[in-house]
Image 1 (cartoon, rainbow, N blue to C red):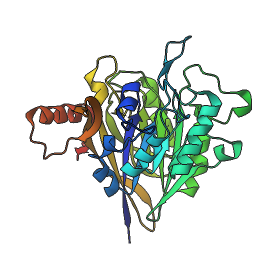
Image 2: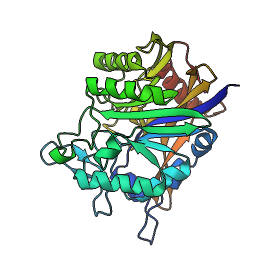
Image 3: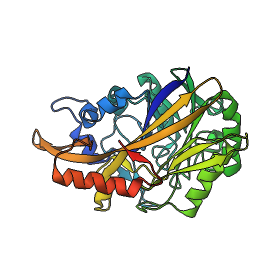
Image 4: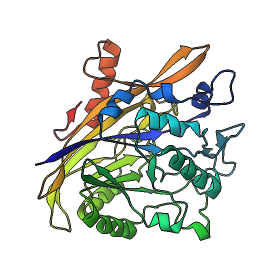
Length: 343
């Protein structure tokens, strides 16, 4: 008898200073991020596994969580530890941590992030506190379907990884990634790869993104989840026979965009995203992804308690507002190609 599972995946979870300030509990020295995700939480709790890209560190209390690298000018992120609780309560099971901001508070911040995620019970991969951890792939047993998850980043914004911690961040190194996928393949039924790659604010993938996705599929991956461009890029499916002799449909979304963020570069597309729903099945002979769909979302600003709050709002088919219907159509037209459906 076949087992079927639903995996929900989202893109960058960013926390700028305005967002952090909006989560501060008035009159108290604590933060509450749960309201940001209340409207999408039912979709997450319906899924069997929920994955997102945590593009901030959780490095402890600071006066200014958003800083700037004086040498490069890049923003450097940190967020109160309470974000982990907000994500877990919303329904997240896994966060990937390999991205260009994972070293924003140095190796100490990277390790503190891992500690907080462990305390909250959130699984994670992409950055590692010990060499032994780096050798242990993340495998989640979902109703009997073994899902393997790997994560890689193109870099760390020129912030150095200490030589004695060269294992701490999974970098995009082609030979290493192929080795990792092939080692993982016999241990699992489905392989998801989170890739932090591409060019910021570009709505189409680069040739390198396309080549890396095909390389990972050839090695045995089933789904590639892209992040970093901060805007949505297309979703594609392709029938590929891998090095293990399995011929099946593989899926890549080159960028899932910003799941939650403030508007970046005055570009409204940086506040639009999707929840990617991945449906997989396993029987006695094989396991494979048989369908994917996309539920559009956007970051809504609302005025409450004399300040702006940030809410991730879904755009289901039942949306009645003409403006929101237009936004839903715009998102889906750009992302969905090759016969893939909307949620």
